[in-house]
Length: 239
Image 1: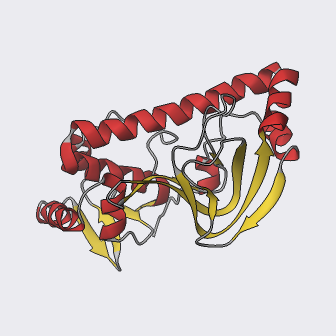
Image 2: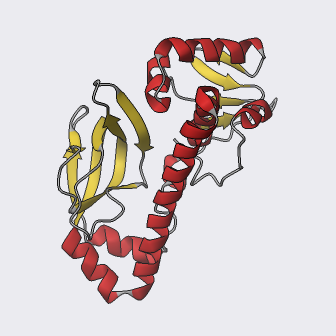
């Protein structure tokens, strides 16, 4: 079977850094190992560090007053995590939870400021990284706010296919990761019951199917039409 598995490293949000500037960043970091279930930081903590994911997975979450968790981002090897404006003495707006045992490189604000002051080309790459962060945030809020829960769900399925997709011989795409209905409901701010109904509707329309507990996208065009997909590049259209 012909497959095309997208690697997390190739999709990392630090692709905008040149090899030289990424090495400068890595040299300035200190490695830290975190166990599954621990946190890089909590909502409200002071933002004075950035974190580079070397292995493992981290999810960025926001909790509502009712205690419901909204999953905003999933970070994988090659991604850098942290507040996109670390120089203004801000506090983190979200919590970063470790999904599986993870190794990160930690860079302090002072080290980052020194790199920016010493190397103009690094400063430009860092601005590109900030721009990517803002674009991802903008497109996710667009999906959540403008086209209802069906649009939010279908856009999330497309993002999952870009992050974990395996292209099949018949042009279908297998999301090679088991995603529960609860996970999907937390990603789009919906109830689990409404996600069940929307997924059942997509199955009736032959847009998706389940194989071994994983979602197979059979009609990508239908999903794109529902969420008014703007065909963003993969570094933006990701989970």
